[in-house]
Image (cartoon, rainbow, N blue to C red; front, side):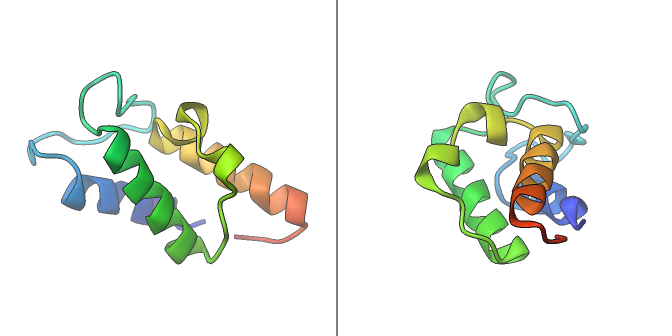
Length: 85
């Protein structure tokens, strides 16, 4: 899975303090690293990068608040579709 591409996208496009190294469990919203518009940008990136549609009901803080949560979400999507990411 190319989850590192999500880390790079967030790091390069959404984090204002370039000195912050994103960790897998960092809660982007709680830590003030990403705002709600940033979450939408992450969702759009995930859709393009992983060639998958993210249904509106899946656009939740629980699915997109950290790198680990995005990876878990993508794994669930992959399993539900019976495909590999």
